Length: 129
Image (cartoon, rainbow, N blue to C red; front, side):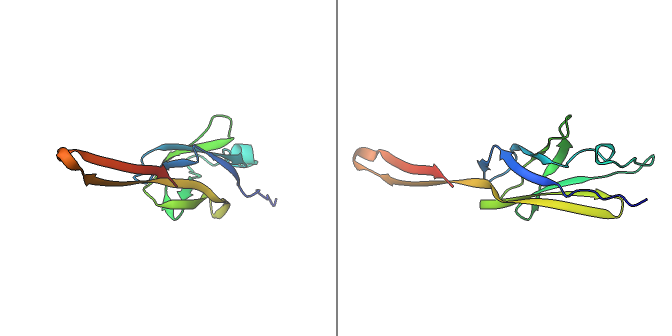
């Protein structure tokens, strides 16, 4: 019997912005992320069907499916600027993936300072992507 599995569809990321140092929990929402059984496949005992999440070219750690299969949470890796978000699922020898271009943005914090009269330090900056 031939089984056709749909590619994961990445729809949004919450939060869509995070620190460049990584280490923040993010949730990637979409469809067709689910467990192997929800995708019409009955796994054999002891088989593992990993789900991987990438922010840009860096892999998130500790990926875990939400209980309703609508998304996956993970810890963000370090990064810079806007990046694509991709979800890859491997079922045995089959692998499929979905991408959301520019779905996550690593924030940067630009600061500048100067020593003013009287020995006071003036600090200014902006938080943005």
